[in-house]
Image (cartoon, rainbow, N blue to C red):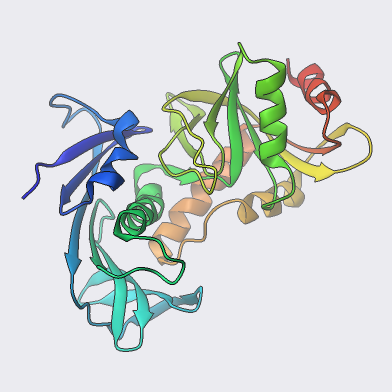
Length: 291
């Protein structure tokens, strides 16, 4: 049995136990924590194992089926998600009722996209973290987050619209002052009454992330345009955009927690729409407004 590994992710410790591929753990190493930190912060425990066969469970449904094979529900007093393949499951994640402990069981088969066990285990651990986060007071936000002069800017948009491009323009324009936090799904948590954006090992297809955090200065929704202009988002428009920017929670108690955190977050930070081209002019338009 491998020794447990401990990582500091935002404001909680992630303890990984069991049979986790070394390549998966390598992807977490920049977040590794050393020493006895228990009692100082909350601990999320994830136990990993591999099985030749995982029986699919007939779940008491919650919010239905997602991505055709991923199911969520209750079984035997536990919260479960499973990737159904007929009477079998390719991956089953079992959550305790407090969402502080998760069992990740995967079959050792290549996924349809050709990814190996190490990649699938990384995804499973990331899924576990996202589904547990609201119990720790956090959410993930679909945005490319940078830290600029000690403040976090979240560039949000549907995939392919230009959020990563805007974040990259800031880093290129101000290489000594701007750094990537997370290019796809930064963690948002409140610390000492202030919402901060945190890096995490799960950062979408680019994988760009750093183990840094900063207080959120603003959320900026990117829209393609022929000139550069900014307008504030308020009321229902701001809430609607925010609801589209967080990962769906399929367990009712976690959905309620997530919505509560999201609404408080949106009430605490300014939210804007940026219509822009791909130029440094877009950077300067936002910079002149916020700094």
